[in-house]
Structure formats: structure tokens, C-alpha cells
Length: 589
Image (cartoon, rainbow, N blue to C red; front, top):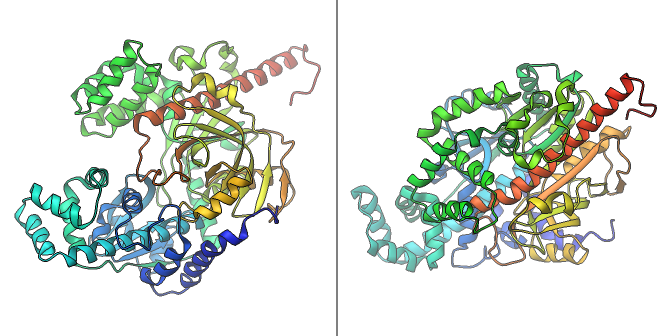
């Protein structure tokens, strides 16, 4: 594939990456301003107007959603793989700092209350994510600082609004005009920053942003050690010996699988609907009524799952959260949150403890689930990692578990040809990390998902690109791949396939090759649902949130994964029973 990969379009992106990796080798802090020139020259698809005088609010919103609000005061960002790394480099007690997070990026971060933010990283993909985000945020901050400074007295008026506790319509209108913000841009900024918006604008008006970043340890071994610590915790807290259990590996999220196999949301429907009615969200209430009246084809269970997720995030839902954890434990679900490393929960689901009466109705059509009573197989589900962390995690799991019967990857992607909410099913993946093109038998086709998807389309036989980072593509690069037939852009399928290669081959994954993964001794399934359309100007998760309607593709793909696992395991148990009775004469595999 060397001749077909658009190297020319990658030149500016690779220059940017080489710049920050070479600078991060220093033991001193790297000033973000030294990266601004190459960041702008890259012409990132997520930051197309980086070189313009007016703010690129799409990029600012995108980064605001993925950085903690304390970023207002942060001047130093320090990156490390583990508590030991931070301790060795002069930060002995980072976990005693305030835990902070960004609403749209799951990452373990701690703030010292002053100017320093400590960030745990799981792989090089975290560097490829964090550094461009900090750079984009600083570029846009400083644009707005310049515009506020030009308007006489505006910085002082903003400071007075914050210190005096007053925030009037006249100031809002002045800020919108000075920053050249469209009404929808202003609404998005308000939605993200909420009551902290005046403080944000005051900080922007007071001074330019001058952040630095320090990589405390960047060796491959440090990532392996951090991953091993994560796995040690999983192994210690598992209620059984994982090395002796058949495994169905799933990479998805922390809610969809457990919701569908326990029936917990349905048991608390009345309480959840009281919560929905109490929210100032007429659109959601109207949607509930339309579903009940049959005016829309949305699935009622999906609605309950969404309401449960939102309710458990509130103070009133804390007791229900405790009830859920106890209920799941009694139904064969073990949750193992991470600690001291990266933020990645594990769920262990014992198939023998699933009860037909508790399963989502979409799972029980014609499957002989009674055959699962004697199985010792489990589903090992992990919260979707970021980029190359997928390789580290699955490689670690591979050497510590018993038989692998299936590996299923479910997650978000950008689509170059479809719409937000579509489901993409690839059987070819080009991986930027290895420069490999992987050909594999994806066990899913459109017929496995389409019956359960309401609002989008299912596109199978797609080609996917596993990229370095969300900022690290430009329009020319994506257009070149689009002409080559690639329509699905995400970050994890390539690293996962590199790890799966090592399950079946006697060497580490190759580089710059066409890799044929036919056949394999286990199933491989990859399902992506579109959350971004980068070829359409401005359509990314900085401008659009899947919200409730993101539940449709999430649960349609979850149904497909769970039905596949249940069907496969019932067949395995049927064959085993026939073999033990002497009726099965063939191979048990």
C-alpha cells in the first residue's frame, strides 16, 4: 500500500508531530507558543481557521469540551503514565490534588489549585490528542484576547461583571459583537461554560494564554508498566481466575451492555419518568410522549437507558447508583474501575448468570438461552480507549486470559460520506501507526444491525482509517483517502488489529504491509457509528452533540454484538453437550 497512501498530504501533519515529539524529549517545559506556527500550517480539519484573525469557535468549543474548566488558570501541563512517574519527577502527591475532567474526554487529571495540571497518559495517542488541543485552545484564546483588547474598556467591564456579580444583556451583546460570534456560537459557549462564562471571558480579557507542557517519561516501557498496573488491579478484583475462562472481548462503553442484560432501567421506569418530567427539557418530554403514542419508531428501552444515564449523574440519583451496582453484582456483572493509572473501567459479565426475563427484548427472539446455564464463558468489556492504548490493553489481556472466542469493537467514528447516526462496518483498515492495511473478515454485515437502527443507515463493506489523532488530518489528506475509497475515520481499529495479529502470528505486527487476517481462530467484529462529518464544514462534535439520538446507533450496534455472542456461545454449548453424550462426531472448534 505504500504507493496509495497520500504521503504528500501528510507532510505538514508529520512536520507538526515531529516538532512536538522532538521538543518533548527535553526535560524542561515546552512552551505551547513554539508549536503554534506548525499547528497553523497543518490546516487541521478540526481547526480550519486557525490562521484567521476572527475566532474559530468550532475549534474552541471542541477543545473546551475536552479540557477541564480549571484550564482558565493552568499554565503548566505535566504528562505521566503512572503515579510512580510523577513521584520520580518531583510531583509526589498529584492524586491528592483536585480530580478534574473534561465533559467529552475521559482522562484522569488532577489540578493543584494553582497553575499546574497533571495528566495521566496511556499511550502516544494521548500526546497526539493533548498537545494539539492545548495549542488550538491557546491560539483561539489569544485571538479573543486581542479582539477584547481592541474594544476600549471591555476588559475592565468584564472584570467588573465578575467581581460585582452582574452579567447583563448589554455586556453579552457587546462580547458577541466584538468576538464576531454568530448566535449559535454564543449559545454553544454558554451551554459549555454555564455560570463560568463570565470568568472565562474575564480571564481572556486579562491576558494572553502562555501554557507549557512537559512529558515526564516517554519510553515504551513506561506505557507497558502502566498497562500492567491496570491489569493487575483487574486481576486482583475479578471474582474468578480469568486465565481459565473463555473470553468474549468487547470494547465499547460502560452502560450499553449492562443495561441490556440486567433490565435495571425497566425496573425503575416510574422513577426515571418522574426525573424526565422534572427536567426543563420539553424536547425530551415530547419525544417520550411520541414514543408512547407510536408516532415515532424509537425504541422505548433506549429512551429509558438514556434517562437512567442522565439520572445517575445527578445528586438525587446517587442512591439508585448504589442499587444498580448491587443489582448488577447479583446478576453476574462485576465492575472494576481503574485506579492510579488511566481512566478505563472493566466489566466482567458471566453468561451463565443471565436471565431471559431480565434481558432486553431484542436479545431473546429465538435464542436457546437455557444452554448458557453451564457455560463458564464471560464477556470482558472495557471502556473504549483512545488510539494506540487499544494495542497496549488488548496485548496485555491476550497474555493473561484463557481462550479468546471473539473480539468485538464498538465505537464512534467520523464519516466522509454518510450522516451523523449512520453505522459503518469496515472490512479494510489502514492503520497510521503501523502503515499497515489490514484485511479481515468482519462478522457483521448490514443485516445484523439494520433491524435495530431507526434514524440512520447501515453501510457495510467500508474502508476505515485509524488515525493518530483527531486534529492530525487536513482536508486534502481526507479527500485523498476518500478518492481511494476510505469513508470511516477513527483511532482504535488499527491498533486493535495489530494486537490481534499477534494472537495468531509468531512475531510482532509488521510495518507498511498488506496484512491478511484470514482466517483467525476467533471472531472479529468492528462496528462504528458516525458522530462527525468532517467533510461538511463545521460538522464535528464541537458543533453537534449526539445527545439522546446517539442512543439509537449505540444500542443498535450493542444488540448486534450481544446477539452474536449469545448465539455463538449457545452453539458452543450445544456442541459440547452433543460431544459429551457421544452424538457429536466432528471437531469441537
